[in-house]
Image (tube, rainbow, N blue to C red; front, top):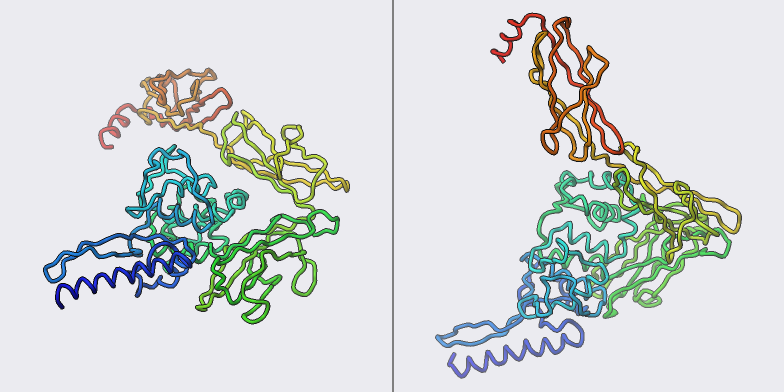
Length: 531
């Protein structure tokens, strides 16, 4: 090929890519179609995101030499097998959920000039995601936009984006541990993200790997992030209210399930299913191509009846919508919870872990509107806040470690009275351990007693077995206390318990340490040499 022919060829190639981009601008993202995904397993899902105008890739000009002549050739790549950064997933989520770019300074390391994909402004998208609590920082004021995102952080973003954070907060620690324990590496999930991960497992947003692992700390690839979003977010359901009471009193007797689906109207079939938590079908709506059309309605109303017209019981139900596009690809929404209570009342506490003297906020929600809501523990009426009520309690100073429950009482115009419990765990930071040096001695010998305690301990004393008096210990440093005593010469041979007690301003804790008394100094000396 001659040089003029080469120029014509590359010019035509450029025009083809540009034309592809111009067509895409009307029906897909502004990027030309990605040249590196043609044979990738995630091609079809990436294509859907591209058609939905939410995908982003790397575009630009590449310097090449052909027949000893330099040329700039346009390229458009998705790079599916590279790690997904926190900024890239934030942009994808913001666009998928139809957010508009906003200004702000939420994160110090995301200035207005910040670029993702080398050339694309990303500040406005990350601010939009942050404003809707879709994303969160790695430390106060920091986002680390160019860092790879882990699977657990990606799942947490998805749970929050789908409006499931409040559902995650209602899970008890027993339920959280039960869900995470289904995977051999579930304990690797960061403590602050375990509720969102448990909700994702329960609602089948996360199914793990065939070997039974969750791999929460593994970096997410761009093809995996595309799959996660395409399979969970391109069809979404939102029941409102998600707690209703089909009891015939005219107050929230039904719930409306709002359905959001593909923007490009490529759906040819759709369905909506309501199931029990054991995935038994309660109610199903279904259509198919050629009957009513393939695009699902904006809202479907459920009156709490099953497929046969029978009344379903109180409890938790799950709803899910699905569609099938023109390429016969199925897309399912995330499961969304629907609670049926007659009338409904539930409550939760924040924080979940608290120490004696801490303040715990109790939040309550009810499907029917009560006359007033009462926090029994504080003996006071709770304050209204939008759709719910809130009040505070102070953890008693003498509270023991373990789970406690705050009781909420609601009274309704019908005269009905309902109760709900908000559980929290009392964490007592008082620790105590003691040691005798030596632990085996003879009458008349001096023994040193050392205690290791929490820093907030204000006093430690010991009680010796041969006297009723207490022996005050002296603080050596923030956590170490010490005293010394002499074994009475009249002490009999045997094993004695020395009691050690540590005190804070709120409570006490005690432990005992054993002392072996041997009446023969030589035997004690011989043992110390051989040990």
